[in-house]
Length: 255
Image (cartoon, rainbow, N blue to C red):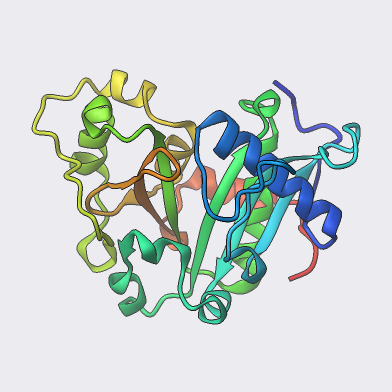
């Protein structure tokens, strides 16, 4: 585990930064979680997809690490303008986002969030949230969303966490996306809240603490070996803790 001392936050602008980000994605999503995809380069150890060219890539860098492995944290950010250029948001392949579009709010999709294992539980995620806060503020973003994943494709194995999310964190209907390959999240069981939260991925717990909600239904992504949910976070509904975090933000690079 590492603290945030010496870590740098910026938007990736160079081929070296983008390659290092793709390498981190490979380490987490392919090697660690068992995912795959048409643009995964196993020889180079890089995970990419067709949306990358339309996104900003917010990275946390440890300058003490070797070049090419210096990116230790990542958020991929897709604005509405980027989604129009790409043809859609990434999440649209899994969820019906019509409620978000009808809301008229300025949207930002968060994706490919990952941290190097040695930096989990330390200050790297805090730095990413700081940068995200400034990015959101500068662009007038009103609603954040994106898919987050449980490892594995058996919803019964994560019945407690899924049920808890459905019963206590379901998004308000006007902004509630629905899975396009619907997997019921309410597994009709009595939930041990403490155990369910312990089993919840850290990223999902982080959004819930910030006032986040979830869409209706899970989505099984067999290519990535995950069970996905859709997270929604309205920036005007942030908790006081999140407002303090956002307000202390350290800037990222270019728009």
